[in-house]
Picture 1 (cartoon, rainbow, N blue to C red):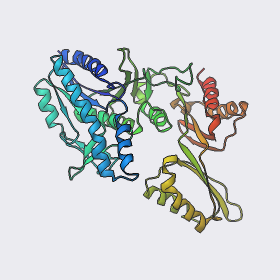
Picture 2: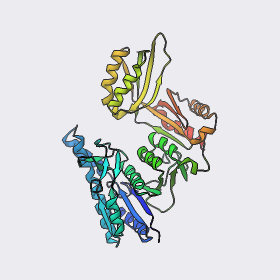
Picture 3: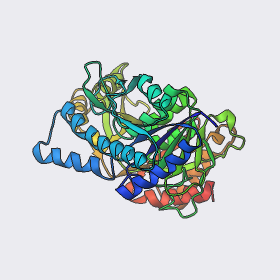
Picture 4: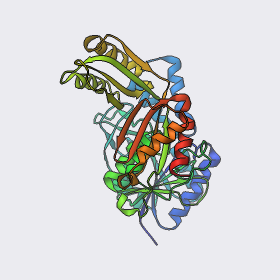
Length: 404
């Protein structure tokens, strides 16, 4: 009998009602019956988190982050208890734990905490008694034992961190899709599912809007060499393995095409060309936790230039006062914020060894009469800022060009 440790994560759609929870319990039972030690991370049921946010919104438009974390953490507490009950009903001993009970220690950044340490002692104690361990995803505590949630995709992060802490070779992420595709299969019927994809590619795709995995969970997998297996909770077929590049034999030139529509472009004209001017702007934005994506600065002419960059639409409120003050001090007093943009990207480790990818991409967009407003590149990614209403056509064109 095998005694390896298996870590699984089930998302909200996988535990959306009691029937689905019972089905998840049956799947877990099979692993337990094979003699494996099973730790399961569970999200809140269905749209529970959204419903809790809505309740808070009915009371306050700006609730304290600490109290929001206290509120939102209750969603997972319901699902872990129900799953533990379902397993016990099947004759499988199981015990549920909140993040605080397991001492999942975070940095204390409410609503967006980062895991610093997981105390595995209670998990090992449960394993030694032959129990399945059910863990509340998306949450931990700070040094003062305040509940801290981990932000968007936090349950994925919890699962991969748990797999790393327990020394598991693989972390199974069960979701409502079969695996990682070359594009969104709901919009691109010809999209192909990957059997394997590198951490680097998945990290880029996750940060560019592919909703299968959150980027922080991929970073953890890469840092601790935990293979992440993205698979469907509705059947037993293998999904996509996210793993290190050296374990993958065939590297596609372009492994995925994405469109990200939650961004806005900021343009500040007539900025003085002096050392430290740009640093001042981006330092202030960073201090407000505003993440900047694509940045383009024009070549200086007569001692002035133009700075353009993209930020998430949700950060506009926090960023706007900084941007406007900066434009008054260093520019012509005006800052333009355009919310009608999308960032389309082609990603692939194969780009490292293939020439002409950028030329092909630009030509493909030009043939569809799609104007490129900004360009950003890395070793395995090319991103273009375009008009938002052209994003779907752009993804279709690029997918046809690179993948078929």
